[in-house]
Length: 391
Ligand code: DSN
Image 1: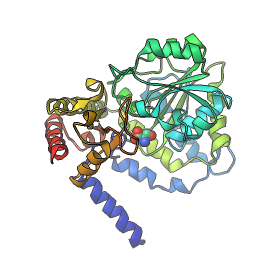
Image 2 (image 1 turned 90 degrees about the horizontal axis):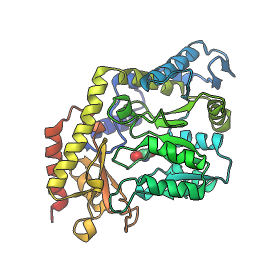
Image 3 (image 1 turned 60 degrees about the horizontal axis):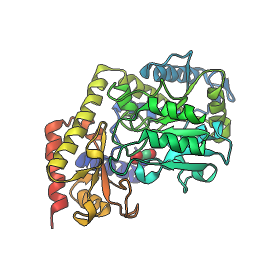
Image 4 (image 1 turned 180 degrees about the horizontal axis):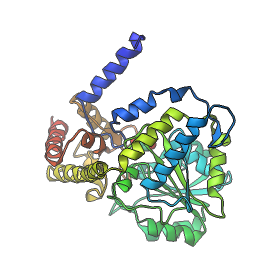
């Protein structure tokens, strides 16, 4: 690479990534094939439109790549093209979620989404996101005592508020979600059900987390978390008389975006094929085992784990413990100084501020990619404990 300044920064970041223990629940390390596709000549191509209906010439191979990627995405989640469509052009998770709302919910209407401090995402209608400005969020959360979803309370809320669309699937909820119960709630108030499976799509692909497809009308996912692809997103929608898929395609292009990033789409295709292998299934299983052991060991060392554990790749540690411990910011800073990268995180019913909340979020996808197993997780938990308890 001729640009020495940029080369130096890339090399330093590469070195940093290798030298730390990465417990950011939403990060991962992609394969060299994914990197090759990302850095390919496909970045030179403009391909506005959809396969076989483009606004520029020269899309012979791009169309083939587009068709291949969509076929792989449907195959990975065991979906029939007769029942499901997938849009592969959204540039990442936030624009994907916005596209669904633009397509399916008139501005000013209500959308029901989990509050940010309980584990929801900004784009599920939080006030600082455009999704909270153009639509009215009906916020919901977990039960204060159990710290898990209370489906009866959700149903009462949905019937009272009558949102047009309900969003399930979160960024900081460690437990299984009962998609069937969500379908019943959506039906009880006449809402569409959208599942944002960004955090768990890799676990669903690996068969270690329940699939939402039997129950949802629309499913969005980023591709760079457990799924281990490039930063991008997929939007799956039911392909029926309601024409949700057509509305979503129009919202993505020309509604919100211009030309798709075809190099990114090629890298998604590579990651999807990787996720279709037995090696990936083994990986997904290990991700969950590692998270369970990390939670268990921290609990043994005296830390409170939100909801008492995890069913997935992530866990929330209450580091504050009603003033007996330390704040999430200090915890995250201290860990980073000692080579462990995490993010500070609110816990449900947090009394502290989001910039210095009561907890941290830990995830195992990245370290599992690097070959870590249960014994490493026990050692990491002990290291975390020593760092956080140091006076
Ligand atoms: N920012 C991602 C996360 O860390 O969960 C969600 O988009």
